Structure formats: structure tokens, C-alpha cells
Length: 297
Image 1 (cartoon, rainbow, N blue to C red):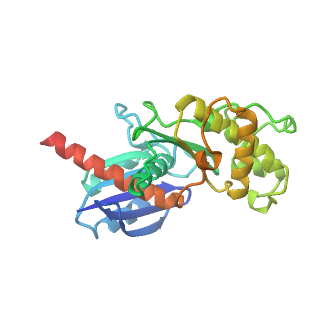
Image 2 (cartoon, rainbow, N blue to C red; image 1 turned 180 degrees about the vertical axis):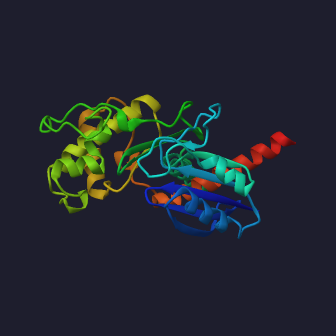
Image 3 (cartoon, rainbow, N blue to C red; image 1 turned 90 degrees about the vertical axis):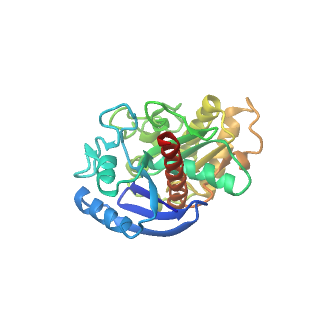
């Protein structure tokens, strides 16, 4: 018996299959072009695996996650040409005819962290997974379930306290300006510095400012959801930056709640985002299959 994974992100789609023990057996990267061409390639890939019993699907957003909505499974408004108001889940189900789970790309990676901790015999039953890249996304797991009835958490749009050396920059979020995403995302750093984050030395003071804002997000996640662990991922997070975040967290939080050793509490992902998303989607597919099988019985 096999299960499948489909993760759509930035400019490509990762498709994979794995067994019931969540061992990845095969995977492929497909360019994200038009919906028609991309979906054709996805369907052709899965036609090679007749034993796939269910598929976990995760996607860039915004997507409709409310199962009671007539647009459940849709990609809503997106800057990606041709993908706005596209029925991703329904189209896949129409061609592949297997049960499918559906969630955000960040949620699938968060679930992958949760499942991987169980597979490693070190279960983390409650965690917050926050990614920092072109945007800021979050997936939060509590006792093995996603937090968020009407959608996934939008921690990227909290309004952090401004750094005293960063009172002029207005932020880049088209909705709120200086929300977390408007201050620390890749486009925000580009707007601040006039160059890509890749070109900026880790000794530049801007990374202390970014860490100050990210630390506030980890504090809010700590106070609201009380997770066992917070995972920070995405392209702007590295070993140097996460140390800065821990230092800011310690200073700003001032020991209000004991979260233990900060190196254990605030960590980078255990695997690449792609691998975690596959692990998460395969596990969600397996859960979907057995849930529907039990219900149908």
C-alpha cells in the first residue's frame, strides 16, 4: 500500500509516494507553470503508482480550508498568474479518484515535524512552525491536530512593537504596512536595504532588527498556544540568525514563563522544508484513508 504527497509552492510542485511507515519511495519536482500544464504533469506522475490509496495535498496560499465552504480546496487570490480562484483539490480528485487531505504548505511541514518526532521516539505533541521567506507563514500543532477552524494561523500579520532603531521604515504589507511580514519578509528586507537578503552580511545590524521582530512572534506563539517547541524555518533563517532570535527572546520575555533551554525550545527544522512537507502529507493521506475507510464501514 502506498500514499501520495503533492506540495505546491513558489515555482514548483513536489510529488512523492511513500509506504505506510512513511518511508519516501519516489519523488519528482514539477515546474509550476499554468494550472493546466502543471496538473497534467501531476496526474501523469501518479498514473505510474496504481497502489496509491490516498494523497495529501498542500499548497501556497491563500487557500480555502473551511470544509463547509463551497470553495473548499480552492486557491483564492494569488499573484501567481492563472492560479487565482482555481479549484486545486477538486481538479485533482476529478482525475486521480482517491481520498485527499488538503492544507497549507506550512501546515504540511509542521505536521511533518510532529510525525518525524514520533518516528524518532522523541514525540513533540505540540509545536509552532513559523517560516520566513517571501511571506511569513505558520502551522501550529496541538496534541496532533491543527490549530485553526476557519483557516491556518496568520502570525505574519501580528503588529510587533517597533525596534527603537527602526521607526522610519513603513513596511511593505499592502494591508497593514508594518506587520511582521511587512517588516521581515524577503520583500521587506529588499525594500529596506536595496538588495537581496542573500547579499547582506550577517554582521549587518539589520539582522538584529529582524531578530527583534521574530522574537516577538515566538513570544506571542508561546503565550497563546504554549507549545513544547517552536520551529523557525525559511530562507532568511540560519544558525546565526536563530541565535540572535533566542537572545532577543530571552531579553524581551524576561523569564515570565519557564520554557526550558532555549536551544531546545527555539530550533531550526529537523529536515528540509520539502522533506518535512512530504512526511506531513504522506501522514495526512494515511490518516484520511483510514478515516474514510472506517466511516464507510
